[in-house]
Length: 143
Ligand SMILES: [Zn+2]
Image 1 (spheres, rainbow, N blue to C red):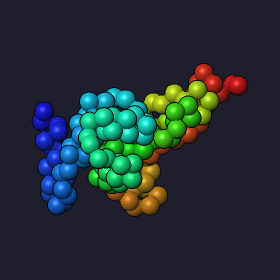
Image 2: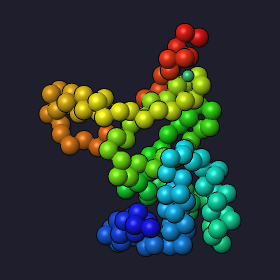
Image 3: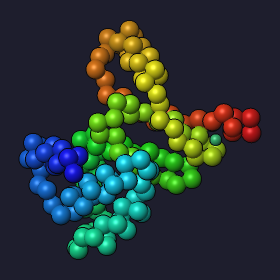
Image 4: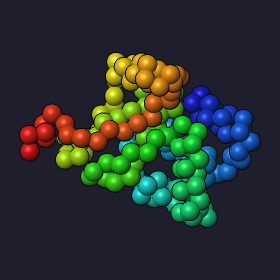
């Protein structure tokens, strides 16, 4: 479980306490790395696993993981607010179809173009591109 340790060490480096709820949340996110996890799923999971967890503390922990760039928030048309693991992934941007809700990860090529444009236009470098684009996919654009 190297990854869990990596994330735990980030919390420790920031002097954040590793509460049972945080530990469980991190493990849950790692176990569902490739999924878009909804708030409801997180509440349900933590409600079962950890005693005495309330919604506002879960929400605070999610906000914390967002700030640490461990997860990214997405708003999926069919599912609502979701979270996706992004830590140690190069590309943090997604494009989401407003009609069918299909979420795709942006590729490296797009990332590099945006990075270059940021530098050329704003003189801004080493940006952490954590972005979500909403639009219409190939299949839905004609409807
Ligand atoms: Zn679509």
